[in-house]
Image 1 (cartoon, helix red, strand yellow):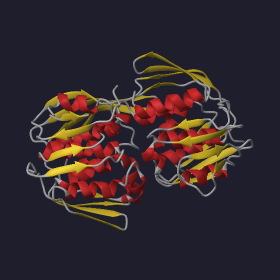
Image 2 (cartoon, helix red, strand yellow):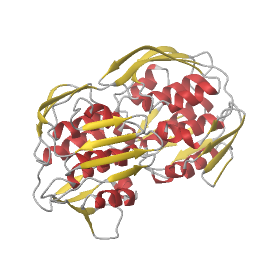
Image 3 (cartoon, rainbow, N blue to C red):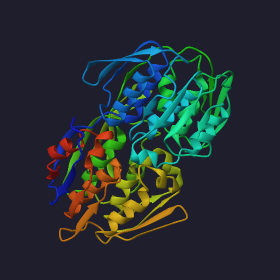
Image 4 (tube, rainbow, N blue to C red):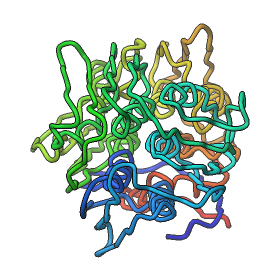
Length: 447
């Protein structure tokens, strides 16, 4: 896969389409498979892995920590686990997380309670701008140290604790922080208890669930208990398609006249389908078919048909189950007649970019107005626009979701659009442009 820098130029609308597609594999589950495989006993297998920038960063990091990873064939890997507490790296060596916040938070969770670790950690320019204050505060409770003190952005030096003790943790809406607490708890003495008021994505729990001696989930009381210092059995994961990647093709289909799409073999975990639930509530023609369970994950086909939609009313309760889909929802809101509102979305300001501000700027270029205050974004939707006389420029933000959303906006409105550094999309969706081509999208790559 060519990851060299390039810009994307789009000059024309997309025509109608009726297609069956497969989307890229789920990034969240792919990353977790390697990390949990690395600390399990024996040989784990991971099939249908997403082969993208973020996942390659994960593989590089665990190899530096002494784990053997073998690629058996495309997308299929064996992970020779070192066991719990057995990752190691020479002092003051560096780990680079690239663009991946998931990798950063989860691997730092593991390393914080792995004895004898002193390592420099960093990401790319985009990740180095993101605050890690909540992560640092959480893992300091287990006894880990981060230097320099009172610095909350990468690069940092992580010094693990040799005597980690389990904690009680009140989880917010971040699945990454919850997962960091779970993974740190695995190698801590005693119990780590995680209390959830709102359920965030639970892929970490699902992958660990065969280790019943390690993890106990009380769904009624919303408490997850981790019993520390117990060996983990090897895992065998088959990764489904990514529902977040599928969202962009679904959005395009819903708003593109006389179009339909069947997206096969997508992960439909209930903590990940807020986007589809919200759309159905607004009248979207979306059906889930051929549902089955695989590694405790629900998998099925998504069938989408173009239709008329009502403006969105998304309360803060949606946030945890559709965090990645807000940029494309903002595009849709701009192209549906009437005022849409999105509440409880403050955390979007600390993603790969400030996703609220940047999407407002993009929409404004085709005269779609919006207003953000007190954690609520209102978008004053114009209905389907013909914007072929307008130009849209998307700067280099290092944000794959904004690039993908701007691409869909260009295809639906005909706005002459230039998206800088589109290669960032390959961190999560290396097949994105190929799939768009099969649907009839026309674009030009500018190197």
